[in-house]
Length: 112
Image 1 (cartoon, rainbow, N blue to C red):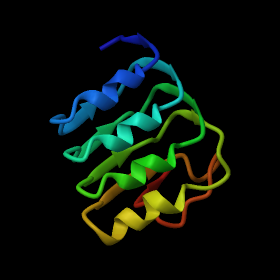
Image 2: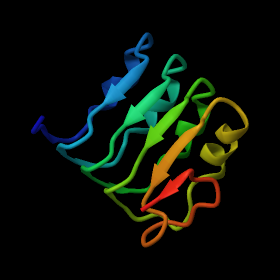
Image 3: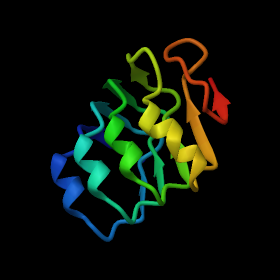
Image 4: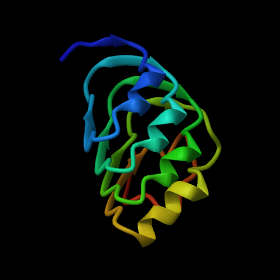
């Protein structure tokens, strides 16, 4: 893929969506907090893009989430939101992020 642009907030209206796989693109801006309303979401693959801003804590509302790939982006938060880390007590088995150089994360399963 070679998709560029931002993610629309309307993405949060796709209530039956189970996966968002947008890895290896040129998507920038913030991940819309509206994604937190997608209760059926099992996986987000957003690695290797140009996302910035904070990682939305609303992702912590996705209790069915099994995989979350946030690595190789430009997030500028100080820490992984606790709400996301708490998902590790549920079904979240894969959490990858840029926690070596960019954000602190004591719950990530792999750091870059």
